[in-house]
Image (tube, rainbow, N blue to C red; front, side, top):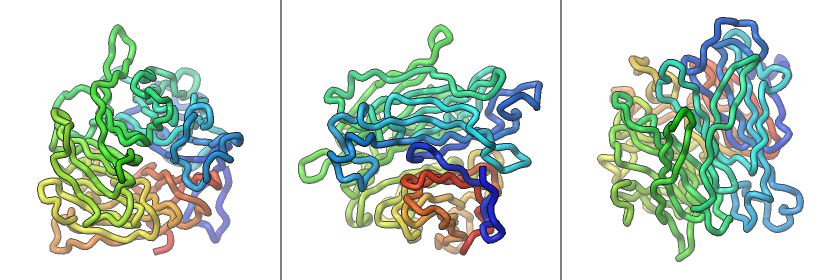
Length: 409
């Protein structure tokens, strides 16, 4: 924990991770397990869980590749890349990381991405965190509180689909935005460095969670070679549709009932570089945001993909896009439905707003504020509350808690 100086009053706290910080994910405290005690070690039931996914290229492998791209391919991905999950509980009254994480989970390989399952939890149901790893595997952990909060291993995918051992799992997403009013089974879509996309079914048998791959297909290629699929997602309002974005400068829409070819595609006529982030609007059917190495955030409606509803230049390659937390709440204020927190790599972080989603006459997407305290690639960012956010950067291993409305505009 480090208190800001007066000149840095726009951030509340920061910490340093021992390994490179590659992803950062928070979870609505309303979904966490409840406890009658508010003074146990590790935090109260109103605290917000924050998980930092770390990725470290081991020294002996560094000479085998350029080192410029932390997500690049390697022939021995699991042994050359180490990682861990670091769990912090952020209190509602004091925005601080605390002296140490409440839990540290060593992983079998580097962590590239992670997502909380955001469906409303049933009584007694634990929150689940899924992580995408350099080994090609997906690991599930449940959030529990005994004497303190912790992440407990719950399930993992097998190695059978990763035949050559070289395919890295680059990104994943739950189907928690597909249709909030229906009891669909849990699914995870994941994307890989060998151009593949896969679906996984998540369920419970005899009290134990399991995750099994149900389908995998070759989704992206460039010049006859597999293209890294940097991002993937489900889409609210389209239960059978999966989206993927890759280094081949295309975003594709797939019908998971028939994956021989995409049902639609946005290509080089729109994107000037690889597609790196896809984020569906949690409350609005058919709407999603897409980010690219070309430094633009674009808003699309999947029913009219010939052009984006709007777009904005954010000054850095777009690695993560997170919608305002009110978008995840039933009856949330529509006034925030256009707000997005963007991790823009070397550009730092941005808070942007798409007026096209606010039922106004304007279709402009504008930058509300910038955060430039990171001195390295900002890869992870998420909302802690409606008025506070967190972000992490890779090479300098910095994690910040900051005010998105009081930084440089």
